[in-house]
Image 1: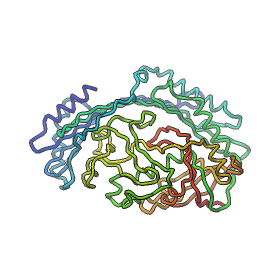
Image 2: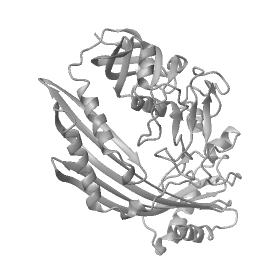
Image 3: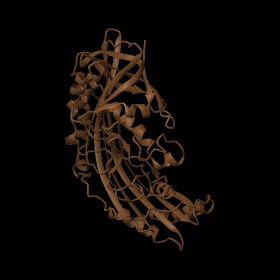
Image 4: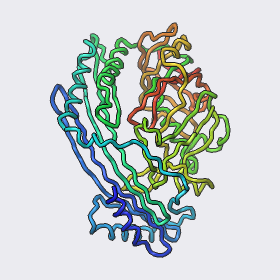
Length: 446
Protein backbone atom coordinates (compact mmCIF):
# COMPACT_ATOMS: atom_id res chain seq x y z
CA UNK A 1 0.00 0.00 0.00
CA UNK A 2 3.02 2.28 0.17
CA UNK A 3 2.60 3.11 -3.52
CA UNK A 4 -0.92 4.43 -2.83
CA UNK A 5 0.42 6.66 -0.07
CA UNK A 6 3.18 7.86 -2.38
CA UNK A 7 0.66 8.95 -5.03
CA UNK A 8 -1.43 10.80 -2.44
CA UNK A 9 1.65 12.45 -0.92
CA UNK A 10 2.80 13.73 -4.30
CA UNK A 11 -0.53 15.38 -5.06
CA UNK A 12 -0.94 16.90 -1.61
CA UNK A 13 2.58 18.36 -1.87
CA UNK A 14 1.33 20.55 -4.74
CA UNK A 15 -1.21 22.37 -2.53
CA UNK A 16 -1.13 26.14 -2.93
CA UNK A 17 -0.99 28.56 0.04
CA UNK A 18 -4.36 28.90 1.75
CA UNK A 19 -5.64 25.76 0.07
CA UNK A 20 -6.76 22.52 1.69
CA UNK A 21 -6.21 19.39 -0.40
CA UNK A 22 -7.43 15.87 0.28
CA UNK A 23 -6.51 12.84 -1.83
CA UNK A 24 -8.10 9.41 -1.56
CA UNK A 25 -6.50 6.62 -3.58
CA UNK A 26 -8.09 3.22 -3.99
CA UNK A 27 -7.40 -0.11 -5.62
CA UNK A 28 -9.52 -3.25 -5.65
CA UNK A 29 -9.76 -6.71 -7.17
CA UNK A 30 -12.87 -8.85 -7.32
CA UNK A 31 -14.16 -12.16 -8.61
CA UNK A 32 -17.76 -13.18 -9.27
CA UNK A 33 -18.85 -16.66 -10.30
CA UNK A 34 -22.37 -17.85 -11.07
CA UNK A 35 -23.21 -21.42 -11.97
CA UNK A 36 -26.41 -22.86 -13.40
CA UNK A 37 -27.22 -26.53 -13.84
CA UNK A 38 -23.64 -27.58 -13.29
CA UNK A 39 -22.12 -25.10 -15.74
CA UNK A 40 -20.49 -21.70 -15.31
CA UNK A 41 -23.09 -19.18 -16.43
CA UNK A 42 -21.16 -16.01 -15.55
CA UNK A 43 -17.58 -15.32 -14.58
CA UNK A 44 -16.00 -11.93 -13.96
CA UNK A 45 -12.61 -11.00 -12.58
CA UNK A 46 -11.74 -7.33 -12.37
CA UNK A 47 -9.10 -4.97 -11.07
CA UNK A 48 -9.81 -1.28 -10.67
CA UNK A 49 -7.87 1.70 -9.36
CA UNK A 50 -8.34 5.42 -9.15
CA UNK A 51 -8.08 8.51 -7.00
CA UNK A 52 -10.14 11.51 -6.03
CA UNK A 53 -8.94 15.01 -5.20
CA UNK A 54 -10.88 17.47 -3.08
CA UNK A 55 -9.82 21.11 -2.85
CA UNK A 56 -11.25 23.59 -0.35
CA UNK A 57 -10.30 27.24 -0.81
CA UNK A 58 -12.18 30.37 0.18
CA UNK A 59 -14.99 28.24 1.65
CA UNK A 60 -15.57 26.74 -1.78
CA UNK A 61 -15.11 23.08 -2.60
CA UNK A 62 -14.06 21.41 -5.82
CA UNK A 63 -13.69 17.73 -6.59
CA UNK A 64 -12.31 15.67 -9.45
CA UNK A 65 -11.35 12.04 -9.89
CA UNK A 66 -9.59 9.75 -12.34
CA UNK A 67 -10.06 6.04 -12.92
CA UNK A 68 -6.34 5.43 -13.27
CA UNK A 69 -3.17 5.88 -11.23
CA UNK A 70 -1.02 6.96 -14.18
CA UNK A 71 1.44 9.74 -13.37
CA UNK A 72 0.37 11.94 -16.25
CA UNK A 73 -3.13 12.50 -14.84
CA UNK A 74 -2.18 13.43 -11.27
CA UNK A 75 -1.52 17.12 -11.88
CA UNK A 76 -4.41 17.61 -14.29
CA UNK A 77 -6.88 16.06 -11.84
CA UNK A 78 -5.71 18.45 -9.13
CA UNK A 79 -6.08 21.34 -11.58
CA UNK A 80 -9.61 20.20 -12.44
CA UNK A 81 -10.56 20.11 -8.76
CA UNK A 82 -9.23 23.66 -8.36
CA UNK A 83 -11.25 24.85 -11.34
CA UNK A 84 -14.40 23.26 -9.92
CA UNK A 85 -13.82 24.97 -6.58
CA UNK A 86 -13.57 28.37 -8.28
CA UNK A 87 -17.14 28.03 -9.58
CA UNK A 88 -18.63 26.46 -6.45
CA UNK A 89 -20.97 28.12 -3.95
CA UNK A 90 -19.45 29.28 -0.69
CA UNK A 91 -20.31 27.34 2.46
CA UNK A 92 -19.03 28.49 5.83
CA UNK A 93 -18.93 24.92 7.16
CA UNK A 94 -16.65 23.51 4.47
CA UNK A 95 -13.29 22.12 5.46
CA UNK A 96 -11.34 18.88 5.56
CA UNK A 97 -11.25 16.47 8.46
CA UNK A 98 -8.43 16.98 10.96
CA UNK A 99 -6.61 14.42 13.14
CA UNK A 100 -8.62 13.86 16.32
CA UNK A 101 -6.22 11.75 18.36
CA UNK A 102 -8.09 8.46 17.92
CA UNK A 103 -5.62 5.75 16.96
CA UNK A 104 -6.33 3.70 13.84
CA UNK A 105 -7.14 0.17 15.05
CA UNK A 106 -5.11 -2.79 13.86
CA UNK A 107 -7.80 -5.14 12.60
CA UNK A 108 -7.42 -8.60 11.10
CA UNK A 109 -9.37 -7.80 7.93
CA UNK A 110 -6.97 -8.94 5.23
CA UNK A 111 -5.83 -12.52 4.73
CA UNK A 112 -3.11 -13.40 2.24
CA UNK A 113 -4.85 -16.64 1.26
CA UNK A 114 -7.64 -14.98 -0.67
CA UNK A 115 -5.19 -13.78 -3.33
CA UNK A 116 -3.82 -17.27 -3.92
CA UNK A 117 -7.12 -19.15 -3.85
CA UNK A 118 -7.38 -20.78 -7.29
CA UNK A 119 -10.08 -19.76 -9.74
CA UNK A 120 -11.02 -23.40 -10.18
CA UNK A 121 -11.61 -23.71 -6.45
CA UNK A 122 -13.91 -20.67 -6.50
CA UNK A 123 -15.94 -22.28 -9.27
CA UNK A 124 -15.99 -25.54 -7.32
CA UNK A 125 -17.50 -23.74 -4.32
CA UNK A 126 -20.34 -22.38 -6.43
CA UNK A 127 -20.86 -25.80 -8.00
CA UNK A 128 -20.91 -27.48 -4.58
CA UNK A 129 -23.45 -24.92 -3.37
CA UNK A 130 -25.81 -25.69 -6.25
CA UNK A 131 -25.49 -29.43 -5.68
CA UNK A 132 -26.10 -29.03 -1.94
CA UNK A 133 -29.32 -27.09 -2.51
CA UNK A 134 -30.66 -29.55 -5.06
CA UNK A 135 -29.98 -32.40 -2.66
CA UNK A 136 -31.36 -30.70 0.44
CA UNK A 137 -35.04 -31.53 -0.17
CA UNK A 138 -36.98 -33.43 -2.83
CA UNK A 139 -39.28 -30.43 -3.24
CA UNK A 140 -36.46 -28.23 -4.52
CA UNK A 141 -37.21 -28.01 -8.24
CA UNK A 142 -34.74 -25.40 -9.38
CA UNK A 143 -31.75 -23.28 -8.42
CA UNK A 144 -32.08 -19.77 -9.81
CA UNK A 145 -28.52 -18.78 -8.96
CA UNK A 146 -25.55 -20.14 -7.05
CA UNK A 147 -22.81 -17.56 -6.63
CA UNK A 148 -19.34 -17.12 -5.23
CA UNK A 149 -17.88 -13.61 -4.88
CA UNK A 150 -14.79 -12.11 -3.29
CA UNK A 151 -12.98 -8.82 -3.15
CA UNK A 152 -9.84 -7.16 -1.86
CA UNK A 153 -9.69 -3.40 -1.45
CA UNK A 154 -6.89 -1.03 -0.46
CA UNK A 155 -7.11 2.69 0.14
CA UNK A 156 -5.04 5.63 1.32
CA UNK A 157 -6.11 9.09 2.45
CA UNK A 158 -3.70 12.01 2.77
CA UNK A 159 -4.63 15.63 3.51
CA UNK A 160 -2.94 18.95 4.05
CA UNK A 161 -4.57 19.00 7.51
CA UNK A 162 -2.36 16.14 8.69
CA UNK A 163 -4.27 12.95 7.97
CA UNK A 164 -2.22 10.14 6.46
CA UNK A 165 -3.79 6.72 6.75
CA UNK A 166 -4.19 3.43 4.90
CA UNK A 167 -6.54 0.48 5.14
CA UNK A 168 -6.93 -2.90 3.48
CA UNK A 169 -9.57 -5.58 3.74
CA UNK A 170 -10.72 -8.77 2.07
CA UNK A 171 -14.06 -10.56 2.11
CA UNK A 172 -15.95 -13.29 0.30
CA UNK A 173 -19.34 -14.94 0.30
CA UNK A 174 -21.48 -17.60 -1.31
CA UNK A 175 -25.18 -17.03 -1.97
CA UNK A 176 -27.94 -19.10 -3.50
CA UNK A 177 -31.56 -18.69 -4.53
CA UNK A 178 -33.83 -21.66 -5.16
CA UNK A 179 -37.46 -22.62 -5.85
CA UNK A 180 -39.51 -25.30 -4.18
CA UNK A 181 -42.76 -26.73 -5.54
CA UNK A 182 -45.63 -28.78 -4.22
CA UNK A 183 -48.36 -29.23 -6.81
CA UNK A 184 -49.21 -25.82 -8.22
CA UNK A 185 -47.57 -23.95 -5.33
CA UNK A 186 -44.06 -22.58 -5.86
CA UNK A 187 -41.98 -20.65 -3.32
CA UNK A 188 -38.48 -19.20 -3.32
CA UNK A 189 -35.75 -19.16 -0.72
CA UNK A 190 -32.23 -17.82 -0.31
CA UNK A 191 -29.16 -18.49 1.77
CA UNK A 192 -25.61 -17.25 2.10
CA UNK A 193 -22.40 -17.49 4.09
CA UNK A 194 -19.75 -14.80 4.56
CA UNK A 195 -16.10 -14.82 5.57
CA UNK A 196 -12.65 -13.30 5.13
CA UNK A 197 -11.28 -16.43 3.46
CA UNK A 198 -13.02 -19.02 1.25
CA UNK A 199 -12.18 -21.69 3.85
CA UNK A 200 -14.49 -19.88 6.29
CA UNK A 201 -17.54 -20.23 4.04
CA UNK A 202 -20.16 -22.80 5.04
CA UNK A 203 -21.71 -24.12 1.82
CA UNK A 204 -23.97 -26.62 3.61
CA UNK A 205 -25.38 -23.93 5.93
CA UNK A 206 -26.12 -21.59 3.01
CA UNK A 207 -27.80 -24.41 1.07
CA UNK A 208 -29.79 -25.54 4.09
CA UNK A 209 -31.06 -22.02 4.76
CA UNK A 210 -32.20 -21.57 1.16
CA UNK A 211 -34.01 -24.91 1.08
CA UNK A 212 -35.66 -24.26 4.44
CA UNK A 213 -36.84 -20.78 3.46
CA UNK A 214 -38.36 -22.10 0.24
CA UNK A 215 -40.01 -25.28 1.49
CA UNK A 216 -41.45 -23.97 4.74
CA UNK A 217 -43.67 -21.51 2.84
CA UNK A 218 -45.28 -24.12 0.59
CA UNK A 219 -49.03 -24.14 1.05
CA UNK A 220 -49.04 -20.61 2.52
CA UNK A 221 -52.37 -18.85 2.98
CA UNK A 222 -53.41 -15.27 3.67
CA UNK A 223 -53.87 -14.55 7.40
CA UNK A 224 -56.78 -12.66 8.88
CA UNK A 225 -56.18 -9.02 9.69
CA UNK A 226 -55.49 -7.95 13.26
CA UNK A 227 -52.93 -6.69 15.74
CA UNK A 228 -50.41 -9.33 16.78
CA UNK A 229 -46.98 -9.87 18.24
CA UNK A 230 -44.43 -10.49 15.52
CA UNK A 231 -40.95 -11.99 15.55
CA UNK A 232 -38.61 -10.65 12.90
CA UNK A 233 -36.22 -13.18 11.38
CA UNK A 234 -32.59 -11.95 11.60
CA UNK A 235 -32.41 -10.94 7.93
CA UNK A 236 -35.58 -8.85 8.28
CA UNK A 237 -34.27 -7.21 11.45
CA UNK A 238 -31.10 -6.24 9.58
CA UNK A 239 -33.20 -4.55 6.90
CA UNK A 240 -35.10 -2.54 9.51
CA UNK A 241 -31.85 -1.59 11.26
CA UNK A 242 -30.57 -0.23 7.97
CA UNK A 243 -33.64 2.04 7.76
CA UNK A 244 -33.28 3.16 11.36
CA UNK A 245 -29.56 3.78 10.89
CA UNK A 246 -30.21 6.04 7.91
CA UNK A 247 -32.36 8.30 10.13
CA UNK A 248 -29.53 8.63 12.66
CA UNK A 249 -27.06 10.33 10.30
CA UNK A 250 -26.08 13.94 10.86
CA UNK A 251 -26.92 14.65 7.24
CA UNK A 252 -30.50 13.39 7.66
CA UNK A 253 -30.89 15.52 10.77
CA UNK A 254 -29.54 18.68 9.08
CA UNK A 255 -31.83 18.19 6.08
CA UNK A 256 -34.89 17.59 8.25
CA UNK A 257 -35.23 14.00 7.07
CA UNK A 258 -34.94 12.25 10.41
CA UNK A 259 -37.78 11.38 12.75
CA UNK A 260 -35.24 11.54 15.60
CA UNK A 261 -33.95 15.04 14.80
CA UNK A 262 -35.01 16.66 18.10
CA UNK A 263 -34.89 13.62 20.35
CA UNK A 264 -31.22 13.33 21.35
CA UNK A 265 -31.08 12.19 24.97
CA UNK A 266 -34.67 10.94 24.98
CA UNK A 267 -36.09 7.44 25.36
CA UNK A 268 -36.84 6.30 21.80
CA UNK A 269 -36.97 2.52 22.24
CA UNK A 270 -37.63 -0.22 24.75
CA UNK A 271 -34.99 -0.71 27.48
CA UNK A 272 -33.81 -3.97 25.87
CA UNK A 273 -32.91 -2.14 22.63
CA UNK A 274 -29.26 -1.03 22.32
CA UNK A 275 -27.97 -0.16 18.84
CA UNK A 276 -24.25 0.10 18.09
CA UNK A 277 -22.36 1.11 14.96
CA UNK A 278 -19.00 -0.63 15.20
CA UNK A 279 -16.83 -0.98 12.07
CA UNK A 280 -13.97 -2.14 14.34
CA UNK A 281 -15.79 -5.45 14.91
CA UNK A 282 -13.96 -7.87 12.63
CA UNK A 283 -17.07 -10.08 12.44
CA UNK A 284 -18.88 -7.31 10.56
CA UNK A 285 -18.78 -7.75 6.81
CA UNK A 286 -18.23 -3.99 6.38
CA UNK A 287 -15.55 -3.60 9.06
CA UNK A 288 -12.75 -1.19 8.18
CA UNK A 289 -9.83 0.45 9.95
CA UNK A 290 -10.62 3.97 8.71
CA UNK A 291 -13.57 5.93 7.43
CA UNK A 292 -13.85 7.77 4.11
CA UNK A 293 -11.93 10.79 5.37
CA UNK A 294 -9.06 8.77 6.83
CA UNK A 295 -10.12 9.05 10.47
CA UNK A 296 -9.88 6.00 12.69
CA UNK A 297 -12.90 3.72 12.83
CA UNK A 298 -14.48 3.56 16.26
CA UNK A 299 -17.38 2.03 18.15
CA UNK A 300 -20.34 4.40 18.47
CA UNK A 301 -23.27 3.61 20.73
CA UNK A 302 -26.31 5.17 19.05
CA UNK A 303 -29.13 3.93 21.29
CA UNK A 304 -28.34 2.52 24.72
CA UNK A 305 -31.03 0.93 26.83
CA UNK A 306 -33.62 2.66 24.68
CA UNK A 307 -32.06 6.13 25.05
CA UNK A 308 -30.86 8.00 21.93
CA UNK A 309 -27.20 8.78 22.64
CA UNK A 310 -25.81 10.18 19.39
CA UNK A 311 -26.05 10.73 15.68
CA UNK A 312 -23.23 9.74 13.34
CA UNK A 313 -21.19 12.44 11.61
CA UNK A 314 -18.46 13.12 9.10
CA UNK A 315 -16.32 16.25 9.40
CA UNK A 316 -18.79 18.51 7.59
CA UNK A 317 -21.98 17.49 9.41
CA UNK A 318 -20.13 17.54 12.74
CA UNK A 319 -18.85 21.07 12.15
CA UNK A 320 -22.30 22.24 11.12
CA UNK A 321 -23.90 20.55 14.14
CA UNK A 322 -21.37 21.89 16.64
CA UNK A 323 -19.86 18.52 17.49
CA UNK A 324 -17.03 16.23 16.30
CA UNK A 325 -16.82 13.53 13.66
CA UNK A 326 -17.76 10.04 14.78
CA UNK A 327 -15.64 8.48 12.02
CA UNK A 328 -18.66 7.87 9.79
CA UNK A 329 -17.62 9.40 6.49
CA UNK A 330 -18.60 7.05 3.67
CA UNK A 331 -17.41 7.42 0.08
CA UNK A 332 -15.65 5.97 -2.92
CA UNK A 333 -12.77 7.51 -4.84
CA UNK A 334 -15.27 9.00 -7.31
CA UNK A 335 -17.27 10.96 -4.73
CA UNK A 336 -16.98 13.43 -1.91
CA UNK A 337 -17.68 12.11 1.61
CA UNK A 338 -21.21 11.40 2.71
CA UNK A 339 -22.17 10.17 6.17
CA UNK A 340 -23.78 6.96 7.29
CA UNK A 341 -23.72 4.01 9.65
CA UNK A 342 -21.07 1.50 8.70
CA UNK A 343 -21.61 -1.71 10.74
CA UNK A 344 -24.80 -1.78 12.78
CA UNK A 345 -25.74 -4.42 15.32
CA UNK A 346 -28.03 -4.82 18.30
CA UNK A 347 -26.72 -5.86 21.69
CA UNK A 348 -27.92 -9.49 21.77
CA UNK A 349 -30.22 -10.97 24.37
CA UNK A 350 -29.91 -14.38 25.99
CA UNK A 351 -32.48 -16.49 24.12
CA UNK A 352 -32.37 -18.17 20.72
CA UNK A 353 -35.32 -17.97 18.36
CA UNK A 354 -37.11 -21.17 19.54
CA UNK A 355 -37.11 -19.82 23.10
CA UNK A 356 -38.45 -16.46 21.93
CA UNK A 357 -41.24 -18.21 20.02
CA UNK A 358 -42.15 -20.19 23.14
CA UNK A 359 -42.38 -16.96 25.14
CA UNK A 360 -44.52 -15.28 22.47
CA UNK A 361 -47.03 -18.13 22.36
CA UNK A 362 -49.26 -16.72 19.62
CA UNK A 363 -48.14 -14.42 16.80
CA UNK A 364 -46.41 -14.37 13.43
CA UNK A 365 -42.78 -14.96 12.43
CA UNK A 366 -41.88 -12.51 9.65
CA UNK A 367 -39.45 -14.37 7.38
CA UNK A 368 -39.21 -11.76 4.60
CA UNK A 369 -40.51 -8.35 3.59
CA UNK A 370 -40.80 -6.61 0.23
CA UNK A 371 -40.62 -2.95 -0.70
CA UNK A 372 -39.40 -1.91 2.74
CA UNK A 373 -37.28 1.05 1.64
CA UNK A 374 -40.07 2.55 -0.45
CA UNK A 375 -42.62 1.77 2.25
CA UNK A 376 -41.01 3.78 5.07
CA UNK A 377 -41.40 7.53 5.61
CA UNK A 378 -38.14 8.61 7.34
CA UNK A 379 -39.71 11.80 8.68
CA UNK A 380 -43.01 10.53 10.09
CA UNK A 381 -41.77 6.99 10.72
CA UNK A 382 -44.87 5.45 9.13
CA UNK A 383 -44.27 2.18 7.31
CA UNK A 384 -46.25 -0.47 5.51
CA UNK A 385 -44.56 -3.36 3.78
CA UNK A 386 -45.50 -6.64 2.17
CA UNK A 387 -44.50 -9.71 4.14
CA UNK A 388 -44.61 -13.47 4.40
CA UNK A 389 -43.84 -15.82 7.24
CA UNK A 390 -45.27 -18.45 9.54
CA UNK A 391 -47.89 -18.46 12.26
CA UNK A 392 -46.67 -18.90 15.82
CA UNK A 393 -49.10 -21.17 17.62
CA UNK A 394 -48.59 -22.62 21.07
CA UNK A 395 -45.06 -21.27 21.08
CA UNK A 396 -43.96 -23.14 17.95
CA UNK A 397 -44.04 -22.45 14.24
CA UNK A 398 -47.25 -23.36 12.47
CA UNK A 399 -48.72 -22.90 9.00
CA UNK A 400 -47.06 -20.65 6.41
CA UNK A 401 -48.56 -17.23 5.63
CA UNK A 402 -48.25 -14.93 2.63
CA UNK A 403 -49.86 -11.99 0.83
CA UNK A 404 -50.20 -9.74 3.87
CA UNK A 405 -48.75 -6.44 5.00
CA UNK A 406 -47.36 -5.27 8.31
CA UNK A 407 -47.80 -1.66 9.30
CA UNK A 408 -46.86 0.60 12.19
CA UNK A 409 -44.46 3.46 12.82
CA UNK A 410 -40.77 3.09 13.55
CA UNK A 411 -41.31 4.97 16.81
CA UNK A 412 -44.03 2.61 17.98
CA UNK A 413 -42.13 -0.42 16.76
CA UNK A 414 -39.04 0.53 18.76
CA UNK A 415 -41.13 1.21 21.85
CA UNK A 416 -42.86 -2.17 21.53
CA UNK A 417 -39.70 -4.29 21.24
CA UNK A 418 -40.20 -7.03 23.82
CA UNK A 419 -37.02 -9.06 23.37
CA UNK A 420 -33.80 -9.26 21.37
CA UNK A 421 -32.50 -12.68 20.43
CA UNK A 422 -29.06 -14.16 20.97
CA UNK A 423 -28.87 -15.46 17.40
CA UNK A 424 -26.66 -12.77 15.84
CA UNK A 425 -26.06 -13.34 12.12
CA UNK A 426 -23.34 -11.42 10.27
CA UNK A 427 -24.65 -10.65 6.81
CA UNK A 428 -23.15 -9.23 3.58
CA UNK A 429 -24.57 -5.80 4.36
CA UNK A 430 -24.08 -2.86 6.76
CA UNK A 431 -26.19 -4.39 9.54
CA UNK A 432 -26.10 -7.68 11.41
CA UNK A 433 -29.28 -9.65 11.95
CA UNK A 434 -30.88 -10.98 15.12
CA UNK A 435 -34.36 -12.23 16.01
CA UNK A 436 -36.53 -9.40 17.34
CA UNK A 437 -39.86 -9.62 19.15
CA UNK A 438 -42.22 -6.69 18.59
CA UNK A 439 -45.66 -6.40 20.17
CA UNK A 440 -48.86 -4.90 18.76
CA UNK A 441 -48.16 -4.68 15.04
CA UNK A 442 -50.99 -4.41 12.51
CA UNK A 443 -51.26 -7.23 9.99
CA UNK A 444 -53.53 -6.73 7.00
CA UNK A 445 -54.53 -9.91 5.23
CA UNK A 446 -57.87 -11.53 4.53
